[in-house]
Amino acid sequence: MTDAALSFAVVFLAFGGTVAWLALGARRAEPTSGQRLVSELRLAQFAALLLALAASVPIGLALGHDDVPGTGLVIAIAAGYFVVAALVTTWEPVRALTTLALAWSAHAVTDLAHVAGLLPPEILPGWYPPACATYDVLVAALCFLPVLRR
Image: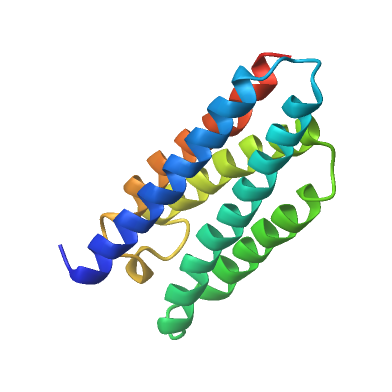
């Protein structure tokens, strides 16, 4: 594993740990308390920022392979995730968390589209799509966890 891949893994594990910590905190709060609302809002904001960051990775990789057909579509899809990330920060937490859970799940499908050849596979390292899709599903579940207790 390269230094860059190892650093990438450590950073995203730390971010995932933060999402887990925020999700569990929101789940533990009393459903009718103001603290619950604040905890859910913090989780939604952090998960939205993380979605924007995750969407930026394929953009950078696509720009590094601008001669590969299909990279424009990769950038357009990533831009859609940026729009979702920006919008949910203005919504009430339950709606934002539900939307984020769906967006993270869709991001997993987008990652796997590279494996299936629907998006250019050569722009990503071979380990990236399955690892990222797994991460995306876990973050989606963590985003939805507090919503289940309502």
